Length: 281
Image 1: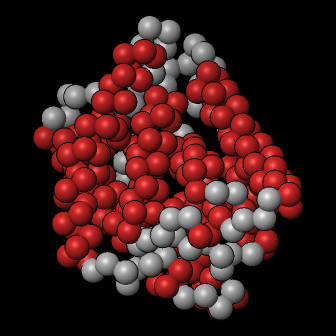
Image 2 (image 1 turned 90 degrees about the vertical axis):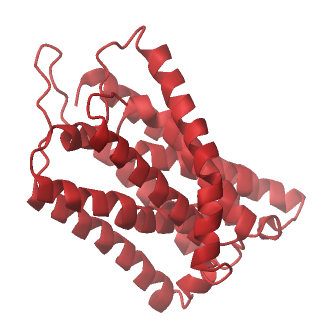
Image 3 (image 1 turned 135 degrees about the horizontal axis):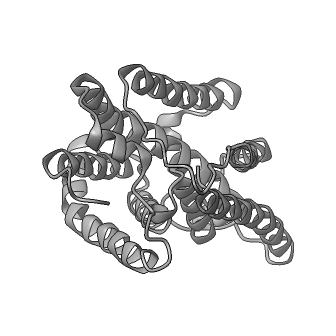
């Protein structure tokens, strides 16, 4: 990874971690003076989370920051090596994603005694209603996120002209391995929405809401979500997308709607890349 990209990601990750730390401390001090339950605001009930869950969220943020510190810097005069899309690498990514998600669900169910279906409101709305609402929000979501992405690109190209797209997107465009591309499509459209919504909106947002409030939790969890994609050019658009998912989660009290919207967004992005590979993000 080149030095400017790594520097921006490291600094942003550090700011996110500090925001988590000082945000929780300040909110807890405020509640000593003005006791009020943040779980009563909105439809996402966060009262079931405990301090042990907050420690896990802090550990996730620390791991992200530590991981960025360990990334090797590519010399400025070295050409960027293209990311190759392989079936083995794609399958390994799927296994890692599912392993993390299953581990979290096991922790919640058997160590914390919580029902993930109830905790994440998966029974509050049916799948068909979630699909209908997701389709209804699809065009506004695309306009909002793609408009912000275009604005970021136009702004950044003035001082960062060689900033490319996400590595996985570039690999998808250039790959001739159709099996790997199909598996990546399945991962992006189905597995990633289930896993990422469970972790970022379901768990991280819920825990942060328990110890701060909905708005602050949405901002911090959305920033973490954008950071894990490791691309400077899409930090703001992805954070904006995550904020929209948080809003839909609060609107319905069900994680099912953000999962559907996430899947629709990723699927539409892949379709555009497949049909128009010459288009840049």
